[in-house]
Image (tube, rainbow, N blue to C red; front, top):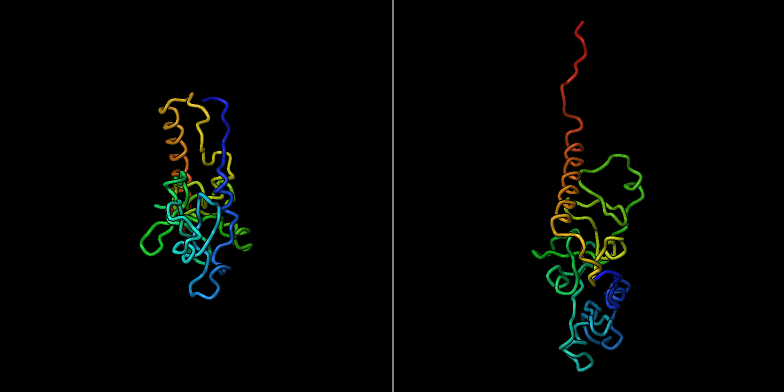
Length: 195
């Protein structure tokens, strides 16, 4: 359908702006009361004790938030049910793939470093991405970019061949760029003349 705009669901902005791993107000006296769950239907974060109590319906769709190097992540298999998480950098946590909710901060000394790393960078924030087909470092970066997550069909005017051809040219250019970075010092060695 032509003319429909990109629409971000309300729960996604709540998820990205929520502060996780604070103590739950309702369960202060219990151990392990940090808020590490997010209900998509209620747009609320809560602790594991809230699920077992009668305050929360068990039929709601929930996501468990984890920590990876002091940053909030969500398991890829959980978020894929509700959101297109393709082209986002994944990380392994206890044998499972996970994606960051928000971009990790860059150190100033690395941002100013003139030596480019092999690989690509996030299209939204410029952070280094390890795996080449990925274009974003976090869910927030994919949502904020112009080519981000599309929740409604904008238009279907272009055929599948056109989109696959564009993707192939983008990948081939990125591979050439990476190959140049890896082999920039290789060549015929130049020796000092013997005297």
